[in-house]
Length: 348
Image (cartoon, rainbow, N blue to C red; front, side):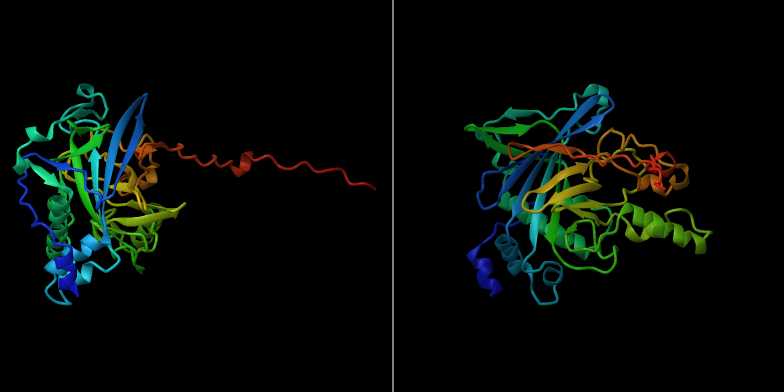
């Protein structure tokens, strides 16, 4: 059966992409639905903009890849990729190049017209080629026993080409392309995940849950440094923090690097909407932007500064339709200042 599926949907060989070369991917294949998200993030008195292009790889394509690469029921393809799983390619068009300072950039996403005949054929990819590359990159990631640092599943050298009003457009901004396996499987522990899997069926484990568990551990492991227990166990795994209004928020521990910013890291926290893809995300590890303007309490500094609240790039437009801004919860009134109800005099 798998061979027949593979032959029915014959797939191109994965291209060999060289990291020092720049490529373009033409997003015009109806077999691969594309959803465009425009988002913004306010930093001080200045807004920064971000575009996220989500490319959905349908199940039949994933099963075709699986049929052509799986050699036994115990292969990594059969164990990691199930029948109902999908792939999601997320292309984040960053508001500027990460090597430049904010003063040298406008914080905008710029699109420019382009003619296809000006691009060498070796530099122009189809969506099928890019998805095939990423499927094999995921297999390589799993065969490497799930490392935290995954440069081959995140590409900084592929620019999208979209068609609008009869013309082709691309961007001069830096683009980070990530690949995710999207599935729905129940789990017992937050460590049952990895860097590349969006599992909407995972058991929620929020940042607050993580800090509470860490405090419990510290009572019995006083000699261990902060974050050495849970932080080391969780690594960079994508952890489902919240399910709300049909959307799923995932967070992860950003790694400690010698360089302040690294374009390989991609989104360290994001909100996923089924049928669309990533609709809000934080790329602070890629950009020279602060993670948050919220000052953390002293008692959770150190371990908590990697788990503090993050200000995401929030969507204001999805597929050309405006999105209402998120409603913030009303501030809690301290009990000491809460107005007490007036007592009525008793009748005698």
